[in-house]
Amino acid sequence: MGIGDKLKNAAEGAKGKVKEATGDATDNQDLQAEGEMDQTKADLKQAGEKAKDAFDKR
Image (tube, rainbow, N blue to C red; front, side, top):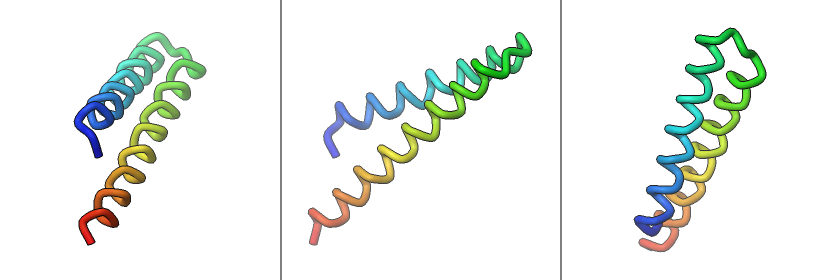
């Protein structure tokens, strides 16, 4: 996994956390759900990249 991909995934996850927290603080369920979805996408991308790395090391 390239460092650029790692940074993008981390940024997407952080953005999702901010959205979720903002949605929670303002009682905006749509924004909160969007933040949770962003975090999930970032986690899935990271898992996929880690799997690629593990396969490449063989």
